Amino acid sequence: MKEGGNMELTLYYQPGSRAQRVRWALEELGLEYRLQHIDLHKGEGKSPDYLAIHPLGQLPALRVNDEVMIESGAIVQWLAEAYPDRGLAPAHDSPQRREFLQWMYFSVTSLEWPAWEIVLHQKILPENLAVKEIIPFAKKKLESIFKTLEQSLGGRDYILDYGFSAADIMLGYILMWFKAELDTYPALLSYVERLQQRPAYIKSKA
Image (cartoon, rainbow, N blue to C red):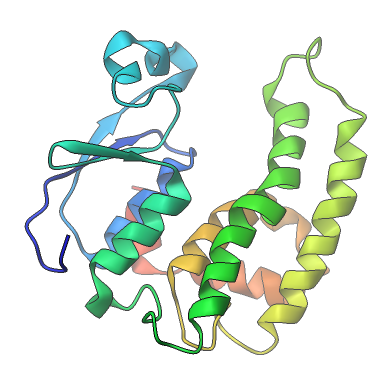
């Protein structure tokens, strides 16, 4: 859809879920949208009505007029590109386009995998299902990723010289899970704190 086209947006959402990325992007873009709360803890994701929207019963889902899109990374990238004048993504012919895509996908592969394994087996699964042996391995992997991000940030405020972008939304959402563990990564800690001070982020948490 061309930038500026009229879109009716409904975000299926639960605080703390990956839908937070999408809500943050919507706020950064200044778009009007409707929130439809889905309580996964109460099993609402498995209701027939919601399964007709998201076949896996997960979050997020974004209804755009009469069509539904799933996967937080894809939604955030699509939103950024649907409104190119809002500056959430470098133009397709920008030299920073490759780096932008690199960090967008890094966030949902290299970063999110060990982060999710730690949260899943440390906090979410019941004791009889959690595999505690996974946690030290995932933490070691996560530390190497923190080092990579620390070096990549250098003296920049955001992950790209371009400035704040959708890649910061994707990375920041996961990094905020581990803010208390970033004391030995000063650039990364400062980065997370900078993201948390953005007005759109604050609105997205309301």
